[in-house]
Length: 110
Image (cartoon, rainbow, N blue to C red; front, side, top):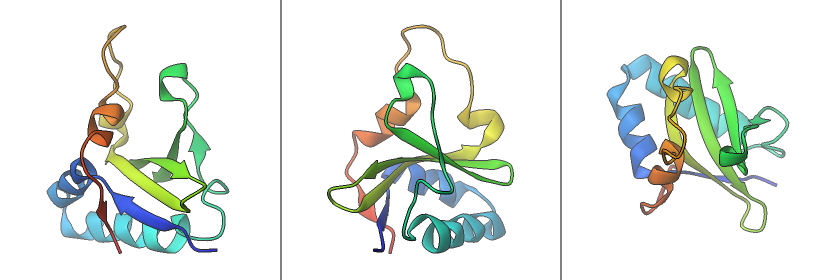
């Protein structure tokens, strides 16, 4: 079963800011590996309680954060970025950046 991968507008902006080679590499990774039979096989769940339900994929120095909807066979990508930026420490009580991106409408990648 193929999964439908969708990019949030925030993730789309982040990918567009990257150089052409890196953005193509990320999009190819999403199409080839993440949208396969089992998106959890190559990803890892985020462990902190604030990040419950989010998964991350590692692609070199870049991280792709995703939520997986089993009922709709859909993977939503709210956040893509360099590892130094994506894992930045947050002050207690500060809303998670990933959640902010999920509030926007989702646009299809493929």
